[in-house]
Length: 571
Image (tube, rainbow, N blue to C red; front, side, top):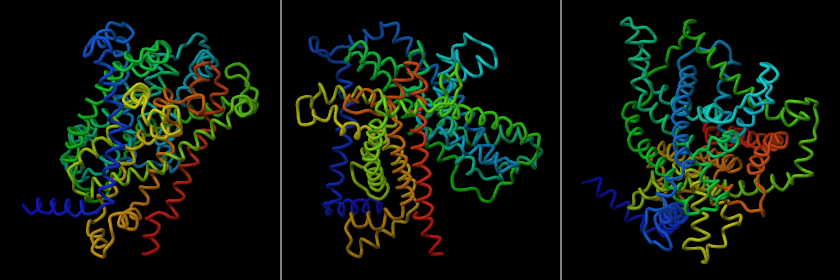
């Protein structure tokens, strides 16, 4: 009863605050217009024909296409394979970091760097490396193993590249779960005579099982939604994301592409709902609070040696693949002439409008990043600190973009803002403009920033903000002068994450970008498809430098100007 009265009082206070009400209305309008509306248009397109009205004939037509049925099978096959492998490798790295005493600092640092490399790099860099290492002109296959007809394209190539790209996601999720397990539970089992393997299978594994399922589903969604890697290294092995792209750009079948997009969206949405509303709750219920004391790290060589060797092999392989990209841009002709030359970098800027590509990508990403970071913090603030009727709607829709594949969103924007309700209205002009690209960048990065913001805000005591309200501050003043400074690290992290995700994005924007804009990722994809690996590597190398430079700058800013630094000064 008291909680209801408190909620009603909170709502009454909020309704009396015009800034808060306006913010909520603008947010609902933005989320509805740029997330729900394109998806709704796709659904309408897939079941409504201009001549037939409501019909399922469009779905019947696409399911009669052998290529589409094969694409569904291929997508699910890749998704399950990548999900399982990524979860296993992620668990291996997380277990070694949390449980095992690593002998050298270099090895520990190598594992941490490798587990973070794919997170801040373009999604298709490893595809280029895979082709250059194991293709017909590959260093390993052609020169070391003397294999001249090896094909790296297809299921195997996609699975390896996606696994190495997405396993860090599982690593970060599982590392937190393993750290929260009370070591006394495992030590009690050891005291009763159980082997380390028995402790792992009977104590540790059951505790993190929901988390493993959560990591698997997140990776599964990422894998089946991925466009760039299957496009570059898939060859004739089509997935749903590439099939949708080819259907709209090659066959010019917008309704067929919309129906295919609905099928892919249905799969990702089902997995997303299971992950969010079933497994996340089980994980939270299984592991509550932090470990009671520090864990005694495993020093037994029979455990540490094999695990360290396994991690080292994966780490060195990932490093090797990343080294290939800058090397590919420095050699005259990869696989044939290894003379060092700067010609590919020169051609990027002199012949292929590299300066415009980097300028357009940088400016569009730079414009979207602060908007995304601020929107994420505002949504997080409303979800955690405010109580109103549409709160659940704002939280769900803002996180929904996580389950929407970029290709699906791209098709939705084409159908929604070219031929949809706004096709000839006031919003029709955004198609082909910088605005639609910035909006796509914002929508795609919003879930990551929102999750980070929610985690940060839940650690702030409500009384801190209430005291500011009691002194006469309105909601805008409280948010800007109290809340935002306290979550400065999360805001800065969200800012750079949004920038990196935007400048390396491809799946949605490849359908929306017009000749007016040149984007780096689109250029890399185009040259990689043509087999011009020198140019593709030169573009990718400069892009990697930009993204890593951004992350290093963020870390520097947080170190010297972040919240933790201020707290140290106070102490």
